[in-house]
Image (cartoon, rainbow over all chains, first blue to last red; front, side, top):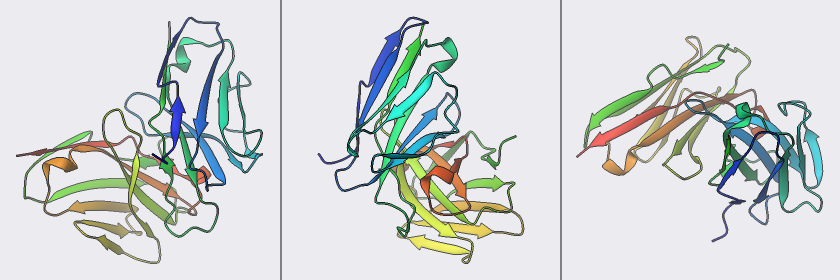
Length: 116
Length: 113
């Protein structure tokens, strides 16, 4: 399977703990996106990378959120000192780059975070 | 304030009939619109898109209509099949770059056999 994969699929943690999610995009895609989806809402953009460069991070929800894509392949999203309001589905998506005709993002299955 | 609205949280349609899912937006700068479909325990998958230079785009059983003056778009599925049962998200953007996509809250479509 050569789709976008995310790990773990579900993470349960206690408030105040740090969590990290990993995303492996489709191998030939140079753009990688992180979105968050809460119950009853659509995906909400957080940040994106073109290759290893993080080109937009102002919409990360707070300074407790950070993302990396060190070699332009996989990416990690870290949430420090988790709060109950961080409970959500974290979606990763990849695309072939700017100028592609359809605007199609390829999403992974998501990582569901539950903060107790 | 939601920039992209899908006012029907759910919709039920009989198999073989037409499904019409609606989406309204408020930002007049939006020029590109997409529909994504999501099954349970899966990520959203791209369905169809339309740019503002068109008022209709068709792909098999799926047709998207855009009314820019009304800031309204709709997705028509004809004929509806049970496998179409999913949550449908409308998204809008000023371009076709993913970092600018604004998603609506989704409409859950149930196609009844």
